Amino acid sequence: MILHLKPNTKSAILLSIMVDKHFDFVIIGGGVAGLTAAQYGARANLSTAVIEAASNGGQSLLINDLENYPGVFPAISGYELIDAMVKQAKSFGAEFITATVKSLEKKESGFELATTKGIIAAKAVLLATGAKHRHLNIDGEEKLIGKGVSYCASCDGPFFRNKRISVIGGGDAAFDEATFLSNLTDKVYLIHRREAFRAQAAVAERVMNNPKIEKMLNKIPVKINGTEKVESIVLKDVKTGEEIVHETDAVFVFVGMDPQTELVDFVQKDSSGYVVTDENMETSVKGLFCAGDVRAKPFRQIVTAAADGAYAAHSAEKYIRGE
Figure 1: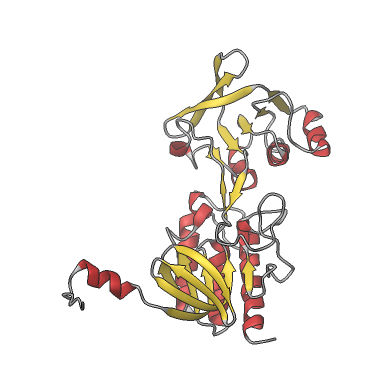
Figure 2 (figure 1 turned 90 degrees about the vertical axis):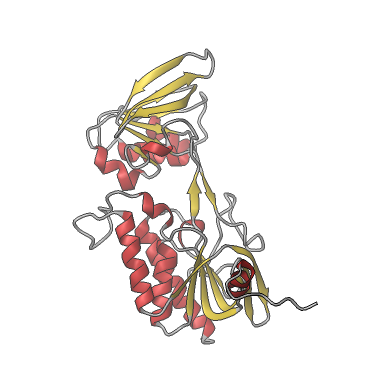
């Protein structure tokens, strides 16, 4: 049976967007790493596409004042930076596709991506899907992100110089960030749900010997109070059930991150689930590159994500041209 569809029907629209495309270089993820790679790939005369399911920018959109990106001064918002990066990449010819990538498969001729906009083929692929900070999922958290609730001490810590700062967590990241924040103020409260910490001994020792860091153990956060900014956090004692209101100007949350690697179960990862690459940003699969927060590395910042993206695009170009 042959169906004849009217041009304006919903079915006709769905069929029209399910179009196969082929690119030299496809980037999955529209954060800083992906957008930088898009610019470099397009400028190298590679047909380049960025596939992003939601809004471009990722975690960068949460930044109200970006004050530590070299050359960007006075500070701008993360949104302004991303908007400029998208326009810049487009000016060089990069194409942007709003779609979800459902699967990624290596073929003899390259890669095949099954997306909600059809099948897309690529000679080389960059995974720049980032990592998501685990949230506390308590009242007040989402509302006060960027207003005292933060997931990056080096990004937002300087805004709270000489203020009351609280850190949630008991692992290496929480301890490292608490140490960093103690350089900015006289008192940092380290809040942990247990008596024992998960941090490595050497890292923990620095915190234990730091007179500026006060430990608040066996306590879990249950609510963050504030209207226009963080004012206090409600803590519950896990042993007694007693709740206290702890006054603070900032809450830095370090309870782990989840790298977005669902598409690449077939590549090498480290013990925390981050994708392992070589110095060329190439994964254990030839032609598949990785950049940004999803990659295994010791330092995650906007500037390092941009560097990753530039290097990945350069390496992808050499791979595509057979160099």
